[in-house]
Image 1 (tube, rainbow, N blue to C red):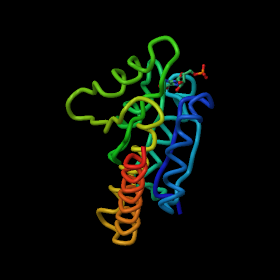
Image 2: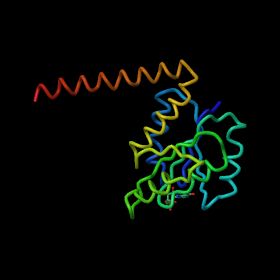
Image 3: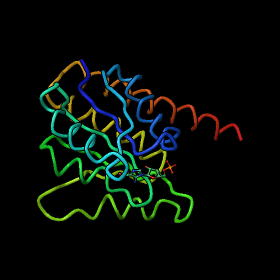
Image 4: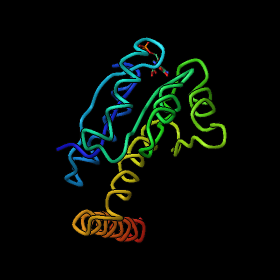
Length: 163
Ligand SMILES: Nc1c(C(=O)O)ncn1[C@@H]1O[C@H](COP(=O)(O)O)[C@@H](O)[C@H]1O
């Protein structure tokens, strides 16, 4: 059963949000993915947020670009933690997305990651860490993920020495 909901405002966000899904796959976490827009499908957005906890989700990751109201509006309708991913927009390079997501009023937080693919990847890891706080098996997989990163840096050091 899905513990994480990955939603995005448009199919054009998928190249970014795919990074979230790839890391969730790597960490063997169950998730569902859907396109939902606060602007274009407001009723669906409210329904999704209202039903999220009841269907077993523990965290929602919401990616959107431009006037990125989706993460904040979902956060307004659920007490599940919401992680916002600012998608890099064409006109303003994602600064608009970042500011729209991060500047929430007090009382309704959205945990905001960096703009673009690195942020999307971190959103997946952050969601895993939230679940891993209560699930030792997930925490163990996260530790292995960290160890693999460390090994990669060791490899880079060797590579640099050979230059
Ligand atoms: N920011 C939002 C919301 C929302 O916040 O509800 N719905 C769609 N969008 C964003 O519009 C951008 C352009 O969308 P299109 O490529 O479909 O025109 C996307 O980055 C999407 O996340």
